[in-house]
Image (cartoon, rainbow, N blue to C red):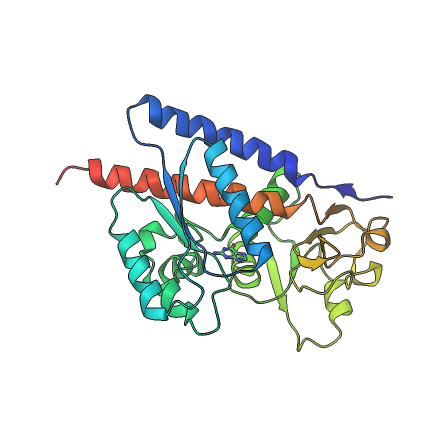
Length: 290
Ligand code: GUN
């Protein structure tokens, strides 16, 4: 047996096409297209690439995009002020502050300043809290939401499945575990202190790895037939390395979402979906009588 290789680029292409059609309908109805604002305050080459990808994807979907690049020596207060200015700009539908921020900046204070109704990343505590409560959330962090879409696109059963998530970050691990739980999986979250990681992972029908340790997940971590989603993104030799040792895992797994070409393209597509959802919610709030 050899794993079905999950084609994130193809699934993301379908999602982006749908979003472009929705944006075109907004324009046809005489509405402004959704506007995504991004704050980039770091000199990390990977962040520059991610932000460029977000800009291109937004523009290809017919959305507007605005980039803010405050100086690298910005203070927490000046970034909070910038976020407040974007919050009160009626033309902006969604925003995100690209992470990481410089060491002198309190990233939590900046993130908390984002208005929840403009939070395109879904990281704000209010939106995160809605997700944790299992309420229908308008926005959900893009990478874990992209993993859920891949599972859906390939008809991989989630309800009642045993799911193991490696990593407990706010960007991936925690919202990933919550989404799987909300979809009725039985979820285990592993981290740096987990004992006998491989044995825990071998229990999984769905294994999601967001650890950042290249090729650490080999066949010894994988139950035969399991769905393995690689969310590792470690820069290596001018490309990006995943957590999964593909040559070892491919003969054992039932499905494998590889790096690159798996979850990566979905993250940007889900950001566009969040931006569209925020724009639609803001427009209907403006249009509502009273
Ligand atoms: N840095 C790495 N991933 C992300 C992301 O999804 N959003 C933001 N804002 N920064 C990131």
